[in-house]
Image (tube, rainbow, N blue to C red; front, side):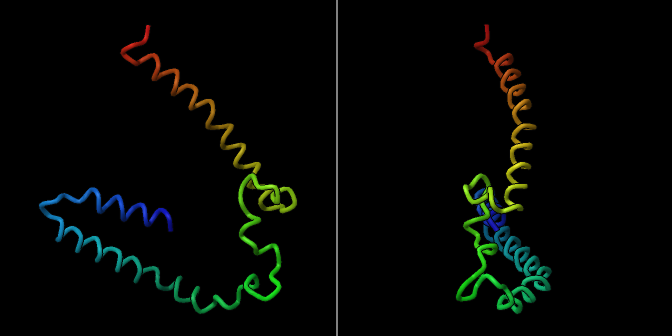
Length: 114
């Protein structure tokens, strides 16, 4: 959802001003075609919304979204989030050497380097 909103904002900002209306019309047509193509998913999702067990009077804490964030204190008791925390730490571990080499490479290529 956030990616879709960001993509629309990016598209509107990048539209050339001399063809704004025709490009915006094609963008709206593309959004409508995308919604029509994905309607098999979202219509069944709307029909099955009442089946979700987390929206009752006494919901199960398993379905509480506030307990499912990475690196939260509740993640130690939730097995799924605990595993996601390990995966996130592994991804950070993979990213750190690359960011170090990128920083070293960019400092060598800067015009003010000694």
